[in-house]
Length: 173
Image (cartoon, rainbow, N blue to C red):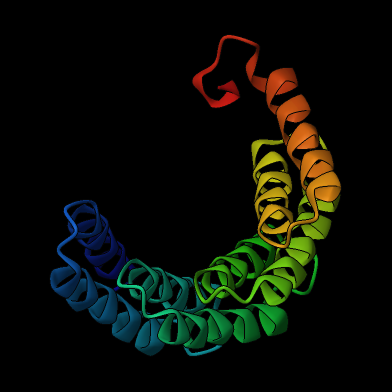
């Protein structure tokens, strides 16, 4: 049952929080198996399980394996959700994070920009996820030594966060 898969994911999240990645994998793979059997391979729940597994590989610094699972999620989501869905932005962002871990900054930038494009369409400019994407892009530009672009994106992220969170929020710092 799908609820059992959700319970496995909840357990997995606890184990990720404890940095017990072996246990996290155990529960994520159980959830993936259930979702594949109950929902099928081409379902967004299955894609989310792939993304969850990719995230654990990221935490282990196995960026190539993380990319494999994030791309699996992306391919499913393209088929079932279309290009302009918030979950597509999450997958693009996850891929950008993994490429960033590999120090493939141009590839990271490519996927962060795709995530930002979707977030602006789905959420608009004044949203925390949009601000996070601007921030991620700014970080990449910093690593590429394009400081003018980095400043542009970081200032945009700051502006959005000030507008939605207020000056006194910890994220502003």
